[in-house]
Image (tube, rainbow, N blue to C red; front, side, top):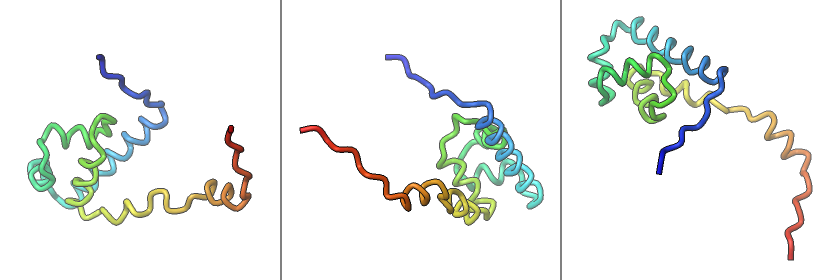
Length: 101
C-alpha cells in the first residue's frame, strides 16, 4: 500500500523554514559546529542540515533533541501556552450533541 504524505500549507512551510533558520543562528551564536550538535543530538549531519532547513519530514523528536543541545528546550514550553480560542469555547459551555438511540 503506498504511503500518503499529509499536505503542508505554504504558511506552515514558511514557519518551519524560519524555525530552522533560527535554530541555525542559535547554533552559530554558540559557536557550535554542525558535527558537535549532530553528535550530541544523536543524529547525522545531513539530518541536522534538514532540521536547519525546516524540513517537515524530520520527526518532532529530532527537533526536540536539537533544541535540548542548544539549551533552548524551555522555549518549547511557550508553544500553545495560551489557548485563547479553546478557553472561549469552554467558557461558552456549548451544549453537547445528542447521541442517537
